[in-house]
Length: 423
Ligand code: ZN
View 1: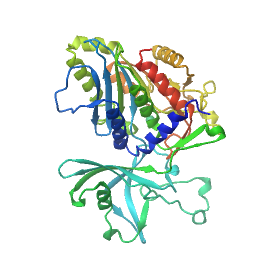
View 2: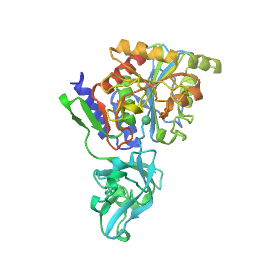
View 3: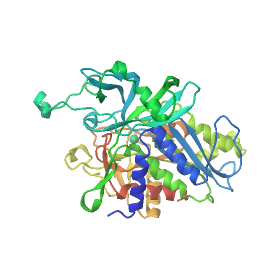
View 4: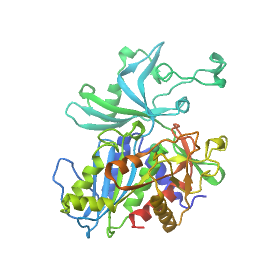
């Protein structure tokens, strides 16, 4: 049984409120507003006083706590994560169809496990932008489905499913004539705007099944988008509990577009975080030298979901490093700097987990199965700040519905809490 059932229930609510990166940012902003964080506009002059602030840039959000005693060389403690998840995005002219079916034109976003997206009730979610430039969040609830071909029409399917990304992944959302239907108008109606005014959109698909505890004692947890909302939520909860008397500036940086490589204005390879840290430092009166001294004493914990050992494929893991679900958050290590962890970072993570009273476990790849990467190495490269890569162990990463142990997200959040507390 989970040590903290309230945490996993709150995580489930966060996931349900966050079908797209834009929704994840809006839900984070809503919680920050309720806790007294002030939203800053990037085009305005920022105040220099201490306090709780945040900035939203498209599907990214950066929030921080500047303590009263902050000076020009006060270091930063940054929790880095990402708001986006693999799936599909809505193409232009999306209302299509054939043979009596209404269908939506979609493009593959990132690296989803395509088979896992079949035969699920999906929703469309994201933002519409009207001619005046205003953004409008929208979500449909259960709306479409990518139907799998019946086994009678594909007798060999269980010997290997092959999906053509253009032909076989087009979801249905009704029957009728696509010439007489307008999917964008439907979204506009849901958003309360006039269809003809909608001239741009960033819309993704999301599984609509509710997050669920299951298994013996309800110890397992299934949901979509745990890569990487498990880290965004853990960081947000930790920041909301952080006091204002630290010797550093605590920062939550949740970027968009990690699943595409992070190269965008709201991605970790862009100047978003550097710009905000520079502006905070400038507000404190920091010179370039002061800022670099602050960076030299700063830390970033890069949190992103990782892999628990799969009981049916243990040979895909390093035989000496087999992270188990419920064994605590991962410390992610890679000789090729696909993760930024080094020995100093490993020691920090050991210290934080000890202070939080949680276990942790190392992840390292089998030499024949190269791992993915995270925003960790990008942040280390871009800012020169020390970075350690960590995260919740999952099964079925990039599935429409991933799996973790209920104890691991709360343990991650506790360790991040120790990080923000100065451990
Ligand atoms: Zn991820």
